[in-house]
Each structure stands twice: as C-alpha cells, then as structure tokens.
Amino acid sequence: EQFTFPKGFWWGAATSATQIEGAAKEGGKGKNIWDQWFDEEPNRFFDGVGPGTTSDFYHQYKDDIARMKNIHFNSFRLSISWSRLIPDGSGEVNQEAVDFYNNVIDEMIDKGVEPFVCLYHFDMPMAMQEMGGWENRAVAEHFGRYASICFDLFGDRVKKWFTHNEPIVPVEGGYMYDFHYPNVVDMKRAAQVGYHTLLSHVFAVKAFREKDRTGGEIGVILNLTPSYPRSSHPADLKASRIADLFFNRSFLDPTVLGEYPQELIDLLGEHGVLPDTESGDKELIKEGKVDLLGVNYYQPRRVKAKENLPNPGAPILPEWFFDHYEMPGRKMNPYRGWEIYPKGVYDIMINLRDNYGNIPSFISENGMGVQDEARFMENGMIQDDYRIEFIQDHLEWLHRAIEEGANAKGYHLWSFIDNWSWMNAYKNRYGYFSVNIDTQERTPKKSAYWITAVHKNNGFE
Ligand code: BGP
Image 1 (cartoon, rainbow, N blue to C red):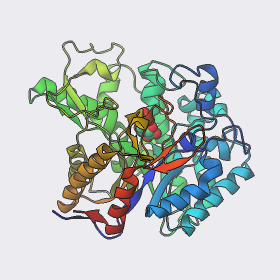
Image 2: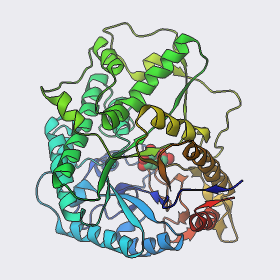
Image 3: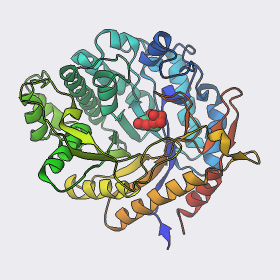
C-alpha cells in the first residue's frame, strides 16, 4: 500500500527551550522554576543532571539546524524561554535573548525549515512564581504582554505561533500530583491555575489578533489522551467521560469552541472547587479561539468505574472518579512502560473532525522514549528499528484519518535530538539523533535515515 501525504505536509520535530538550550545561567537568562527546583532537589527526579547544560542548543543551534536540513525537515517547533527573553517575567527585555532567537529563526528560514514557535513549555519565570504563578491573574496578564512582545520581535518571520504546550500538565504536575514545581496537591488551587492558564492563552490570542498580521496563525498544543472505557457499562462510560473532561476537554473545548463543557463546570461546582472568575470572562474566553491545534499523542488512557465515588461537597482529585486498568493484550513499549496504541491518532483526528469543526491540526508530538538506548548501538549507530516501526504505525493511522476527511496537516516527532526531561533527565531517549551528554556529540540513529526518505517522498510504501 502507498501512504502518500497531502502536498505541503509538515514534517519535522518538536522540542522546548528548557529541554535543549542549556546555558541556563548564560546570556542574561533569569531563573525559572526548573532552575529553582533543580537547586532544591537535584536528585529527586533528575539524577543530578539539571537544566544547566541539557543538549547545548544555545551554542550548537547552527549545526543542529544544518542537521534538520540534512534530514529534510520543512518545519520544527521550538519554544521561547520566557525567563530568557524577560528575565523577571514582566520587566525589561534581554537583548542577548532577542539576538539568540533572531539568529535561530533566521538560520532556520535560511535552511528552509519553518519555525513553529511556542511561548510556554512549562517554564514559569521564578519572579512570576513568587507572585503565585498561575494562581495569580496578574501573571496571566504578564504572559499576554510577553506574548505581544514576541509577536512584535519575531512576527515578521514566524507565522505559526502556539501559546502553550500541554497546559494541563503543569496543572496536574504542579497542583495535583506533585511531579512539577511547586509540588502542591490541592484541587481548588489546581482549578484556579488551569483557569488562569486559559486566560493567559486568551490574552495572547487577543494580542495576536490586534496586531492583525496577514498570514500568521495562532494555536495551542494539547496532549489529547483518548480515554477508552473498559466496557459499555454506564458506570465505565461515565468514568471515561469524566477522565476526558478533566484531561482533554478542560482545554480543548475553550480553546477550539470558546467555552468550557457545562458538565465540567457542574462537576467542579458540586465539589466546591470552581475557580474565581470575573464578570465578562465568559465573553473574553470566546476571544481565545485558535486557528490551529497541535496534538501531542503518546498513549491512551484505559479507564474503568471506581467502586466508591466522592460525595458531593467532598474534596476531590480527578482520579477519585475513575480507575485505570490494564487492557489484556495491549502492546507495551518494553523500554519505557507506556502503552503503544497507534490507532489513538486516528480516533483523536476523527473526534476533531466530527466534534470540533474539523479544525486544522497536526501531530505536534509523538514518539518513543527508550531507556539505556546506548545498548542498541551497533557499528557506531543506534539501530532503533522499534522507533521506525512506531512512527510508521502512527503515520499509517494518521494517513487513514486524512483519507476520511480529517484536517491533519503534519507530523512532528518528539524529538529531534535526545533531550533533557522533566522527570527523568536523560533516561528516556527520543531523538532522531542521539546525544552524548559528556561530549555533546550528535549521531544520527537509523530512524534518521529512514525518516529522511519519508520526508523526501512525502510518504512511504
Ligand atoms: C510531553 C512533553 C515533552 C516531553 C515528552 C516526553 O508531555 O511535552 O516536553 O518531555 O512529553 O515525555 P518524557 O520526557 O517524560 O518521557
């Protein structure tokens, strides 16, 4: 069978500032929550490897962009570090950061790689966190100003903007389950953080619309995790619907449709954890509708009913409404413990086609993390056939969705080069290129050669 993608399909990869730039204390960058957390607890998740060096993109961007060209990327997502551009989040712009991002953007355009730029990938400036982070509405407004400055500085060349990457993750990690700074566990505060994160998105979209740039588009990147019920028993269906409300629709509905699902509002209301709002917010939120949706997809959520549900009025966390279960026969990534379910891509795209106005979208992250990947090194190259298979299987389902009318415009792998990660430093490797973190040497993996052919042919057989 022939899998040819539509003309102009976006091929590339994604990454984020904190995960590849390094130079955390160079170039006038201010401290962000990752620098802070690493200082406080360098060994809890990070094995002593912090955001100080990571993959050294700050110094090696030219060579890396040459690598992107070599493997025929036509696009690539990076994020701007808010604390690099505006060290205290709300004050002066740092000229060294402007120069750095200008150089990166110009170099990419010169090499035929379109920059997709995300404004926030989990990296709150410390000065903003000290004001309460997203719990404080003023921080959302500062984000709007930061966004507006970015549009002014780079909007003449950057045509694809994204406000947030996976905005639900800092809510979960920072305020529900203790895997991101500031390590709070409190649903009421989590709901407030989620709400202000959405408002920060809206302020950025509004600023973008006011600039009225012809040809530019603004979007958001969401990790959509289809939640599949164990059975069609009503209690299982309800459990899966609630998981979907919390983890997908909490950002998908307001950013694409312009309003929150009523069922989510009711649920939070019943448990006394609705966020504080201001009059006029409902109208305001309608102004945050995006042009383009990035979808990050790694694995589905398998859900079954919970034995005892929380009573109205009782404190909650999302998991108090459902249980996870291990679907018999599911395929696992043996090198990282995540389920592999390529059809998830198709289900997401069909859902967007049918329930979200078939908004222009793309797979903005998908990939396979592998621990101790060096064990697959043979003849000087990581023989990552498992990754080739993983990508191919997901692309086949994406292709099928497109054939059935889904408005999917591209596929970006997580990630281009191995990078530092939030909960495991360099344990899980994802790149088309491996990185030796002692020497910072990059080496293409087998998948890099395979994907180059896919890029050149705009598909595969
Ligand atoms: C996504 C994030 C990325 C990246 C990826 C891989 O959720 O947007 O930043 O880290 O997950 O996950 P991990 O690094 O935990 O293996």
